[in-house]
Each structure stands twice: as C-alpha cells, then as structure tokens.
Image (cartoon, rainbow, N blue to C red):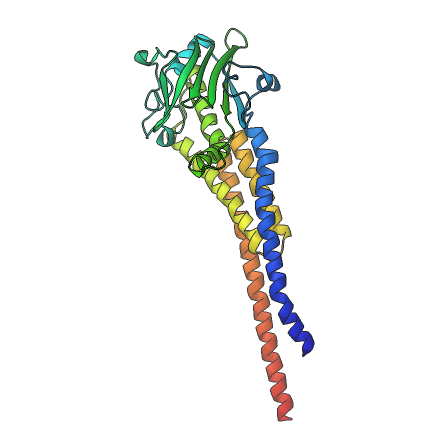
Length: 323
C-alpha cells in the first residue's frame, strides 16, 4: 500500500519535469536551427563568396549591421536592359515584382517600362511600403542604386556586374542597424523582417529577372500557391514542435521536428517546381497525421486493455467470493 502511494505522489512531478524539459528543448531546436542553418543561408541566397565579401556602394551608411544580407541572381541581359526595371521599382510605383497582394496593395507590378518613372535622382524619396520611405543617396546609371532609411541607420543597394556580353549579376545588399531591444513597437517588425525577409526579396529578384529576360511571367496563382504551401509546411513544423512538448515519447517527435524544419528551409532556399512543392507538402502532412494518429490508436488500445484487465480482476474477485 505504501509503495502505491509513493508512486502516485512522484508521478505528477515527473510529468512536470518532462514537460518543462520539452518546453526548453522545443524553442532551443527552433532557435538553433534558425541561427545555425537558416539564417546563414538566407543572408546569402544566390550570392557567391566573392559577392558576399565584396565592398559595395552604401556599405558606409551602416558599417556595423546586425542584419547584413547579400542576395543575387544571374540575368540574361545587359546592365542597360536591366536598369530601367530598377529605376521604377517601389511601393505604388511599378511595384516590387513579387507578392503584389502583400507588398503593393494588391496592385499588379508593371510588366513594361514606364517612362515617367525613369528619373529617380539623389534626394528623392522611394516608398518601401505604407508610411515607410527610403531616400535615394547614390545613383550611377547601369551600375548601382543606393537608398537609406529616414533615420540614416539602414541601407539597401542594387548593383549590376556584367559577366559577359549578354549576362549580368544583379546583387541586392541590405544592411540593418542593431535592433532596438527596448522598443517593442520597432523591435517586432525588425525581428519579423529578419526571419521573413528572404521570402519577399527572393521573389522580387526573380520578378526582375523574368522581366529583364523577356520571358513569360510566372502566373500569380502559381506564386501564391507556392507561398501557401510553404506556410503550410512551416505550420507542420510548428505542429511537430508542439508534439515534442506534449507527447510522452521523444524519438518520433524529434524526427518530425527535424524533418519538417529542414523541409521548410529547403523549399524556401531551393524553390523547386510547384508540383514538387505539392508532393512534399502532402508527404509532410501524411507524416504528421501518422505521428499523432498512431499514438492515439496506441493510447486507446492501452486504455482498452487496462479496462479489460480491471473487468477480469473484478470477475475473478467475484468468483473467489462466491466460492
């Protein structure tokens, strides 16, 4: 009797210790994966080592950035063919050539050169989004365009580097000042941008490339389907993290967290064809369903066996009393 009481007394503390440990482990995996895997790769999407290390116009605006990103893409055109698309870029101008429903108030980005937007000069304001303007601080036609934030703490640079007579590297560098940790209203957008910035920049660069290449533009339905599938995959990672906290076992939830996390990062960095996105997302959700469904079935089976065992014990007790 004493041993049973001891077990009953210790069990809640063991459960609390397990859940507390998992509550520390789950965000630890998230932060570790973000800082060690995703962030280093997303800060240099498409860029070579030389491009990352290269000194670019505008670097002097924020010499000690906490967020220093260099992204790049090869365009099948000469710098003078690409330059007009850069001159007209911006919120409610020609758009950002990316997720128009998100970054241009649902107004479609231009698919042609707009002559009246080709005269951007030093001192002009360039709208980034609602109420957010950067100022043009340097313009060198067919070479580079540099902007800085209103406070002069952050900078963005477009630069064109010819590879040969018909190919050019477009490099987009972004420097953000150290975060204002004591100002939540500023810090939260900063941290969100730190994590989600690549989603927008990648699509912007690819949109510029399509237009300068002169190829058929990717359908908006495909663009947003791809974005939706990525969000679903990310939510699968969040569900796997939750499973790691609440589940009694640890191996399968840990495998699920690792797999969904790597898949989420891979889909964003690699950008596979849409049909691959669909298959991978379906596979992820099947895996999550299997993870939780098999556990639920096993729990019901164990509870059923325990219930049958208690019935058998009561029946045996009744028979012994009768005899």
